Length: 88
Image (cartoon, helix red, strand yellow):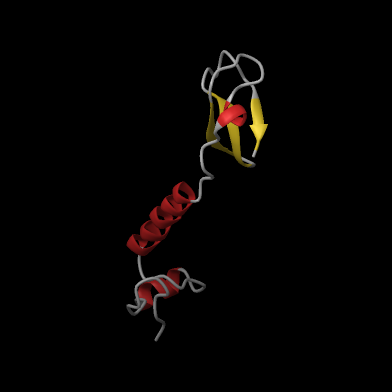
């Protein structure tokens, strides 16, 4: 008997036959994990900058925290007209 690491329910034999390496009982558990990961990333965003750090060096507009493929960064609110960015 295998137990789901997400909800604690028993993993059905049919699922184990199809996915022998699984530790989740259903697609619903997978969806719950994905949704929780999205919420963690949103909560993990760094705080918005203040003062001079919040100003674009090119157009003097406001910068905001954004998430890209390599992590969090500051991006100009006038994007795509201004593509200035700053690392956090």
